[in-house]
Amino acid sequence: MPKDDSWNVVYAYSREQAIADGVLVDVTEAAKAIGFKLGTVVTDHLFHGYVEVPPGLEGEGQSVTGRLHDLMVLALFAARKAVNTDRVTFKVDFLMAPGRKETVEVITHIGPGDHGEPVLTIMLPEDD
Image 1 (cartoon, rainbow, N blue to C red):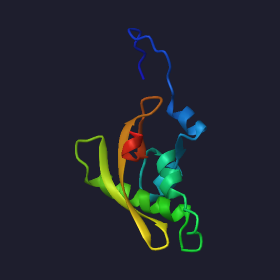
Image 2: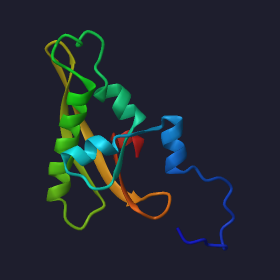
Image 3: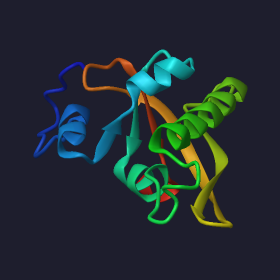
Image 4: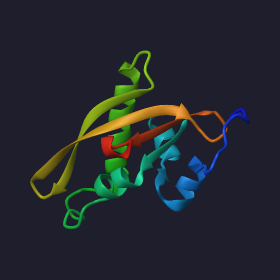
């Protein structure tokens, strides 16, 4: 990003730092396998709350890989329908316990990375 000397920056938290701290989970390789071409992260709240398999579902055909794949496919479908916007919202059903699904609204946002490059962030509305 270009430097603007008219502002006195007190503190800056980079995307790279957020990934290192675990606030953002880098899912770029999974996103590329689905068809995304940009660096992609999921917020820790979304990842640990919904992508990770809840206790009791380990033998129910659930996996982090499968749940992440489903999230990424729905994000890709929503992104392909988007026109002239930097964000899209869509809904995902996650199995949270045997026989109990939870429908979650998710946001995919494209914005600048640490060096001004386009990157994707997939998050819950409260993470925005």
